[in-house]
Length: 259
Image (cartoon, rainbow, N blue to C red):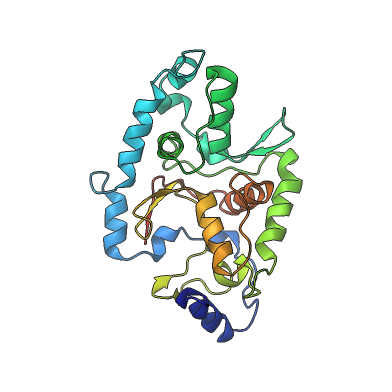
């Protein structure tokens, strides 16, 4: 059975010519915030109303909590996150020399847990990994995104770009068909944004919780009736890297709020 979302996507694309706009020029790129209604923007703007801030507070507690066989906390190595983590999330995904590939912020947290705390990895989309990621990323709120600057990342950025442009699934759609060609329109009542990942992890009202960019990407892939990649898959990391590099120069907003 084709869901109402699939029908809405097919209807939207059928009424527009394919690849109308192409890639969005850097000076025309806009945060998803600019597409939101007044109520949603107000919720994000007020930290006392932004439900994502509850995760940030949990992350702050976890930052100072000792864990693993080493009985160490993040703060034992990194100190005050307000200074040591400022600008860090704006660089991710970043190249890991040991692994020879890019890693996301979530993956870096788990690598730190394994290598320095001798602790088990936190599951993808678990409250603890989201809370720690949100707390770290929140320290970069207002900082310009710089991800993708490292020359070692170039082939991975290109891989992500290819995936963004690649049609897939039963609906034969690519990310670019919605986010480059049809932004500022609506899909099933929700605004279509440019897909700029400035506020992740973010609180999505549809989810009633915080979620990662990988969760959003998997939702989109499933929405075009394609097989979603597993969390942490190289393809999802490459897509996240491309999207962050595409948003280079835009300020971080974590935790953003979206419908």
